[in-house]
Each structure stands twice: as structure tokens, then as C-alpha cells.
Amino acid sequence: MKWELSEDQLIKEHYENLGASRLAYILGRSEQSIYTRAHRLGIEGRDLRWSTDRYIKELRKKNIPYLPEEDYIDTDTSICHRCTKCNTKFNGRPCVILQKDKKCPTCYISCRFDPSKPAILYFVTFMHNDKQIYKIGITNRSVKKRFDKDWTRLNMELCWSRSFDVGQDALDQEIRLLDKYSSYKVNTGVLTSGNTETVSVYIEEKELEVL
Image 1 (cartoon, rainbow, N blue to C red):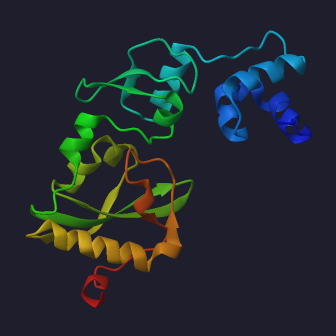
Image 2 (tube, rainbow, N blue to C red; image 1 turned 45 degrees about the vertical axis):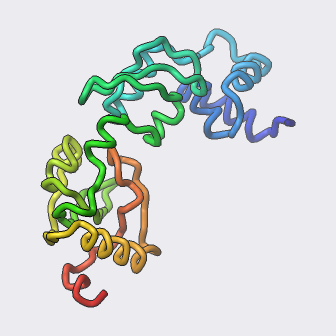
């Protein structure tokens, strides 16, 4: 595929700061092609192939609770990771891990919502880039336990909550609210999970009665 001038300019300006793997993701190209192109553009002595240490720093910066158990190879090569919450080991590609699209299988199962059990429908808020963001969700646990470290890290606040004897009723209400306010959905990417259920407007608790 032919390289565009805009792509070359992006590599020249940001190769040193972003690194090859991030540029590969942005441009939709392979990491190796970014290395090769940077060399052809005369970017010498700045071959920023991500090391394992740099990958770990990126995981911590994004508050992702996993650590590599094997040396980092490149963004698309799957390696073993360890969950720092439960010590489960699982394989995953760094590019997927960094986008928070890969979950620890043990934590995912333990946190998975059970519609047959009592549940809470909640509406919480937090600030992101000087904007008020709201999240609606459901949990079989307490709201604070559901968010774990995100609660204090993002200084989250509970706007309102509603308890249901049967979780399916909470799930039905959540689905209806998200559908009604779908045009206000935002995805900040800052939550450990649940980024697709955030909105930019406040939803009154009384909305539950009129659905």
C-alpha cells in the first residue's frame, strides 16, 4: 500500500514520542512497516521499539491491572499476562490489552452480572476533561465494589440507585434507558470497564416510572 505524505509527516513528527506500535494502530499499518518507513525517512538512532519496561509503564498509566509474564515482542504478538487482582494468567495481544478489550477471565466471570439474583440499577457521575460524565449500570454487588479503584481514582459520586429483587428487572430498565438516551452516549475510555454505558446528560430517577 502506497504511503501518503500525511502519513510520513505523522511519523516524522511523532515517532519519538508515540513509538512504532501506537503509530501502527493510528495509521492502520503493521508495526514492522512503521519501523521500516521510519528508517527510510532517515529517523536514525530513535528506534523506539517498545521494551517490556515501557509496555509495563503504559499499562500502569492506563490503570490496567495486568503485568506481562513474558517479554514484550510487538503489539500484535500474544504473550502471557498476569492479573494483579487475582493472579490469574492468560494470553493476550498487547494492542488489545491496551485498548481494554481483553479481560482477565477469572475476574470477568466473578464480576459477571447474574439476572436471577437481586441487583442494583445505579447512576453515577465523574469528571473527565472538565466535563461532567454520567454512567448507568447494574450490579449484583454494592456500587462501590463494582467500580473498585475507579471509584476513588475518578472521584465518582452516586446520583441515585434503585434495588430490584430480580436482576432481570434491573437489566430491562438499564437497556431501556440506554436506548432512550443513545444519542447522548460518550466513551471516555477511562473506566476499567463499562465505558459504553456512559452519557453526557443527567437522567432523573423518575424516568424509571415512565419507561
